[in-house]
Amino acid sequence: MAPETYRFKIFRFDPSQDQEPRYQEYSLDVPPGTTVLEALLRLQAEQDGTLAFRYACRGAVCGSCAMVINGRENLACRTQVRELFQCPLTVYQGAERESAQAEAQEPNVVVVEPLRNLGVVKDLVVDMEPFFEKNRAIEPWLQPSGPDPKRERLVDPQQWAEAEPYTNCILCASCYSVCPAAEREPEYLGPAALAKHYRFLADVRDGAGEKRLALVDGEQGVWGCDMVWNCVEICPKGVPPTQGIGKSRAHIRRAQRKSKA
Image 1 (cartoon, one colour):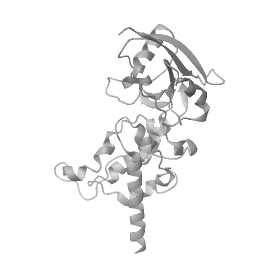
Image 2 (cartoon, helix red, strand yellow):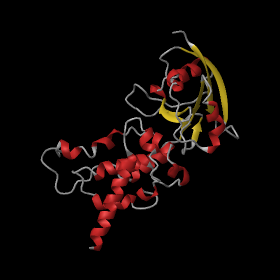
Image 3 (cartoon, helix red, strand yellow):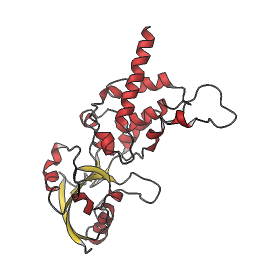
Image 4 (tube, one colour):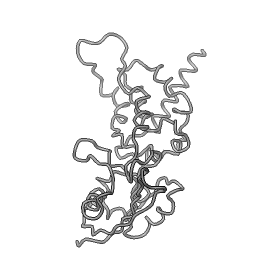
């Protein structure tokens, strides 16, 4: 198959120089099998060396190339340009980008934008520190009770099955980007942090149950979730944050009933 020409409409913004964001257009001949990341690398190398985006693919740091591609959060390294037009889908879109998203429905137009709900450092690069701070806030490490065993803490596979899906998070922040609660409330912990919270709550080796529940028992925690399931739909690794949030809520309710009994 011969290369096809695509228009790339890319979000550009440098806070140190620009008053407002803008979209810059590029034209690129795209051979079959080309991913969005490969297209961006070519644009940067061949047409505009000032274009900024983040990636660490093939370097054991999955998730760093997450961005909004034709209205949908995805990993640029695994999103093929030609496949975008076979099944376009917008899960959640901010009002400030609606005009650009409309153009993403046109044939051979690829609109690339930074993740939402995080400040833009430059172009497609966002400030991930607030996202990581929220993950740290839920104390994402094992806190077992009792003395340390002589050997490792073994877990029966059936017991581990409940926590296992939540270990697959690659911290790409796609779920945070599609979360309406995170857009509304900047202090909301977000789907990734709350999914990680449940991963330890469900771990039978952990002994910090009551303490863990207190970390998320509030509107900035599990009660702030709108339960719209955007995060489950968008996660590239199949992590179900909304399910974990619902189960954490159930744990809190049980603890409250027990304390009143």
